[in-house]
Image (tube, rainbow, N blue to C red; front, side, top):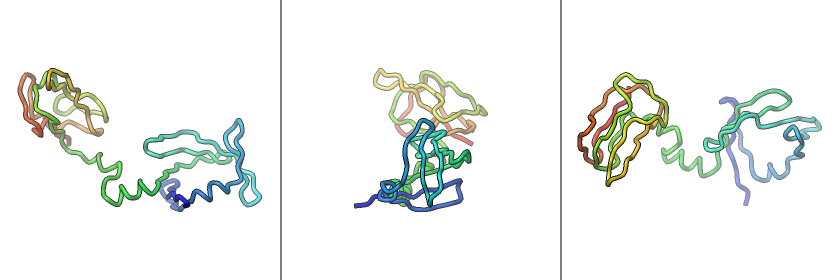
Length: 160
């Protein structure tokens, strides 16, 4: 059974590729990347940059760069269900994942944070848990203070 992929190039061109298409590609790996013969034309290509988790690649073909996004059938199903990767970037607030005690707050109102920056430390069950930013943004408000006990799902921090 052939597996298919949807490919987007430079946020403009969309097409489908099957695993059979890939197997039938006339390509040879060399020290500079990949040599491809397509319609009797020689193409030299290489992957310049890759983000495997997001399935995004910058590909050079005869010294022309292309931004490529690849989605397989599972990615498309997840997107159709409304759970695509980008959906987490719309988070407007961070809530407590468990009850505990606020040990330290690393940000203040108006601070600019990047995704995965440390926001605060929550002690729960004698363990220190670092709560990180789910996305890039600016801190709109902080609903807790150091030394205070909190409940599960209590609002901690809001983003603008």
